[in-house]
Image (tube, rainbow, N blue to C red; front, side):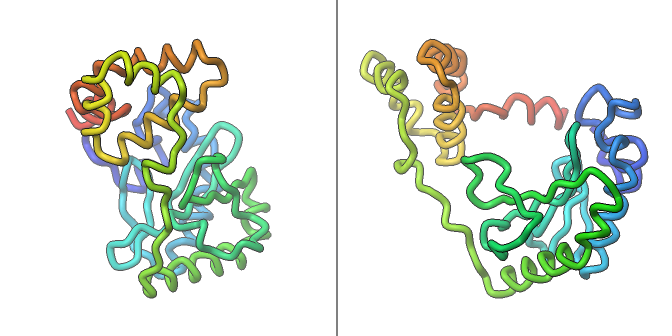
Length: 215
């Protein structure tokens, strides 16, 4: 897939789904709001790139923030947001398992403008953290709970356990979170069985999707 410019993404859509260029495209739904957020990010002296198909802002090649657009809202996501001012009124933890990232969530241009000074302060603070070499302390793989259903399959299939342990830490964490998020035991087992072949092949949950996007 041809890499788009930021202008094309904001005017046509990112092209990551079938809604590109349609009224259902999330980039177009929040076009005006994203334009204001982009202006604020650029006014902070950050460099602008396209990464993962969306506008991304960096300081000396270090990722600082990224524009995001969802059906209900849009905003800036900070890669090391957990290290930013905990008293911020606009920073939100995306999910209970999110360790480093934090989001801002807006539904109007007026709302963004109301918090413009705070957004600029957060961007400034994020840059200063990068200058200081600050790092997020991520949980190690062994600190994640292993679902009982997965333990049972490991015991029954030692080769599967060996294949899982050969995965990169990031891939292991992705699977553990995905399996554990299912509320019912039956669903957890179904998820494990669904990805068994992927794991035997040394693949992460999203490896095939990423390969298709590159082709």
